[in-house]
Amino acid sequence: IFGQWKRDYNEMCNNIRVTGDNVNYTTQETSVGDGLKTAFIINEQPIHIKVSLAGIEQSIGNYSVNSEIKTITFNSAPANGIAITFDYTYAYPILVERQDNTSINTYGKFTKNLFLKWLKSRADVITYCNNYLTTYANPLLSNNLIMSASYITSFTPGDQIQIIDDLEGYNAYYVIN
Image (cartoon, rainbow, N blue to C red; front, top):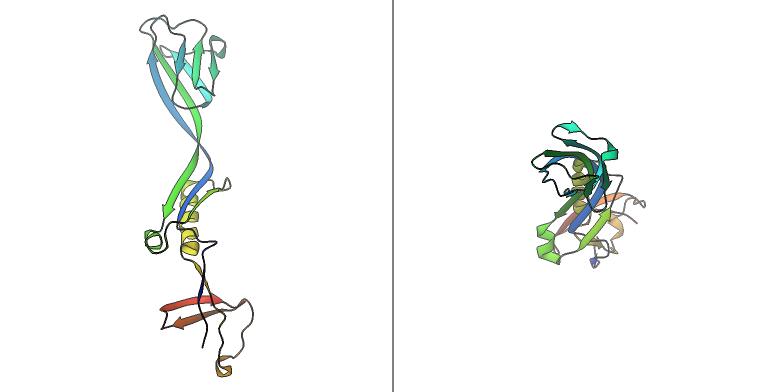
């Protein structure tokens, strides 16, 4: 068998960052009124929020919510020393980054960022990343092999065969094109 191996780096990826769908989280934050302050900043952009003063849930008419700037503004300042509770839900995308260090050390870093909203759980995103690295962490190898007729039985495009090249150190399965 004669032929020369070619490496195609176009599809290669050994560092992948996948952003999946948003996941809703629930949290609670607290503050204390000082009798002067009307605007309170929370840590995340709320989707649904429930505000309580001294344990009593407040109607939406007593305050307004600006989700973009994460601010709850009361119509009048909560009294000095009164406990304020913000119970709310916010969304945050699933984000996973994985890499194949052996491939990076051998070929350099090839990074891809993918946005795949159809991945709905962290476990699904991790599985996708791992499978992607298994497939693309090394360059695609191809070869136009010239074989002696005695080796050829019947090859059909799409068949998968094992090629062992002791001189170049390759032992892998390939698809007949």
